[in-house]
Length: 390
Image (tube, rainbow, N blue to C red):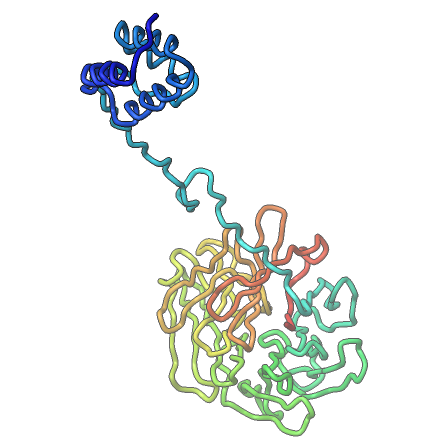
């Protein structure tokens, strides 16, 4: 093939460019020029062959050039592709509403701390499985500090009443604190500081049986405080020393007169709660009064049931009453039946609850929140809850 001078080569390139320019983007044109310059150095024959390829089929020429150079875009109308926007995967923030969330667990309550005292049928006192001498099973009580016991003899040692005795928990330092105390109508009730005992007693002997008086006896024997006639039985003293509670039950000839009475220790500011508060039941015992005197816990019985006897109970009750609101208080007891309460000087209480064959003790604060729980042993479950020292 004859030599091809630069003029002809340039003319050929111009013709090729005019033909393909409408279809080639600038990067593709630049690539073609680089290809032409390299082929000139390789010889006229190779360039002529390349020219034929360009003239005969520009697409084939670009394919050949792609072996050494970047591949230009295809010739022809360019299709614009719009990227499909992707939606980010939703993120899930754990919450209590999702099925996979773990519900918060209630913290396990601690066991009831302190000393819980029980009484056996024989009047013995039990603490942590250990037995102590105790006293008269009808009326023995334990001081709030857990150090002493008090009871009234069940035989008449005076003209009408019996001796009030006090001893240390282990039976030591036993002594007579008062005479002529009523052994059935009134248990010895301790003040919150364990320094006084409330009893119902007869005044000095007269020609006929005198009316009983409500007395507070100093534990050191130094003095007895008199608070007038004791009209009823089973008085309870509030921890602040200001209020007393009792109950009245008179049944006969098809009629029942029954009420709970809360008043000041010296009389006055009396509140009377009738049977209408508890429905078809009657009050059969006064068990305790709260530290501020605004709550009482009572034992009740069905109207057509057995009302019990004159003997009292220190901690066995089934109904808690709000004195000011004149209504029954519902304690936060999940299950079971309330069978006992010991009111505490701090405004809280120790509640005894039975459910099936199990008996539990619940420690409640002054806002009725359960702050401790313990399951009673089988032996203690059969005994009477007597006292509690936190």
